[in-house]
Image 1: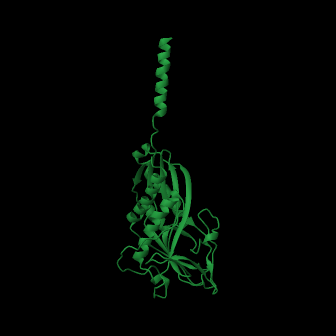
Image 2: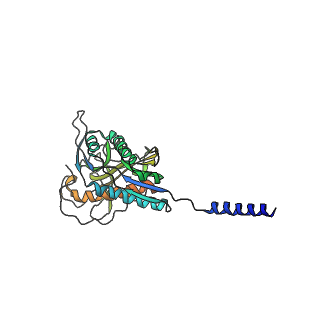
Image 3: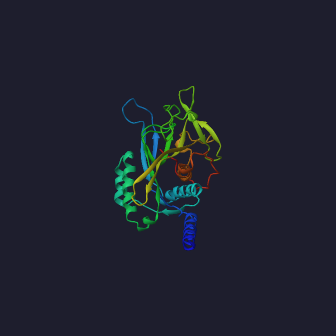
Amino acid sequence: MKHLACIVALTCCSLGAWAQEPAKPPVVALVAAVGDQIDIVRQRERTGTHREPFSRKSFTLNGRALNMAILKGLDQAIEEAEPQAQRVLLAWTAPAQTQQQLAEADGKEREAITLAALKQHLQSLPARAGWDRIEAILPSYFYSSVGGMGRKLSGLGFYVQPLDKGASVQPWDSDGEALDSETPDPDPAGGSSHRTVDPNTGETGRSLTYVATYMYFQRVTLDARTLEVVSRKRQLDNVKYADPKATALDVGDQIPLRVMTSKLLDLAERSAYTSVRGKSQINVTAPRPVEPGASAAR
């Protein structure tokens, strides 16, 4: 009986020690996969034809700076949400073939193309065996107008609203719900003013015309072992800028492109952060010193 009691006691001690052993902290890999193509979308006068009332063009931005801004926001958010988790930041650039596909694809196709290429890259990484999940930021396409923005936007870019009698649109949030608090103020002349930010002072105001930075994306969570999609969260963010002291007649000429690019990087970081931590008030800090540059968009 004494031997049996000793065995039971040792077994209980072992079980107690096992139960108290701290769980292995999860390992989360973070990756930004938005690329380096920035769209400039500008509203134009309706002509009574079936032509779309928006002009569109693209240019290449420093992809490393953009992805680092996104990773910084995502990393901070995961650190706050899961302080025990270990985080791995991944640098990934889409291969030339994928970049060509993206350049030729419609906005609604870009997310699927990017996700397939990203999965192929992740499949080849041996370190993936030690990860628990992967959080990826990918461009997302949205057909409808969102709170004074143009239609058919995807990824990151600039939207120029130069017309003071632009079409009033129903604002939506990222889940397709109407945003009553974002309803634009009607103007007697027939336009709609929206909340804007002075790019020089950070003060808020209302304006019928503006230049906006936008980031339309999905945060996709993947199982690290199988690379199956566990969840998706779409987010549609924008910040509208207008300089009340600007003398240029066209709002697209009021803010230099270098200034707007800096604002876009700020938005990318904050959007990635809020995709994890939830929506928060956007506080615009003092503008960074920039060199004179081209106008925001034509």
